[in-house]
Length: 80
Image (cartoon, rainbow, N blue to C red):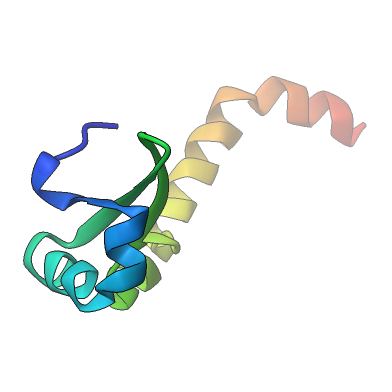
């Protein structure tokens, strides 16, 4: 994962000035909170999280169709 340095916030800054974190999220779409010089938390916009967690019906149907075609012989053997 590539980390934009503009989105990095220390744990101390996040604790003392959470509005700074929210402004970064509003501007860049996410903020990364570092603890002990390592990325620890990812803060993202709630709407972006909702959209990224679900696959569309078309994507699911396309993927399942490809799998059915690819393993057609195996499915026929299992159906016996």
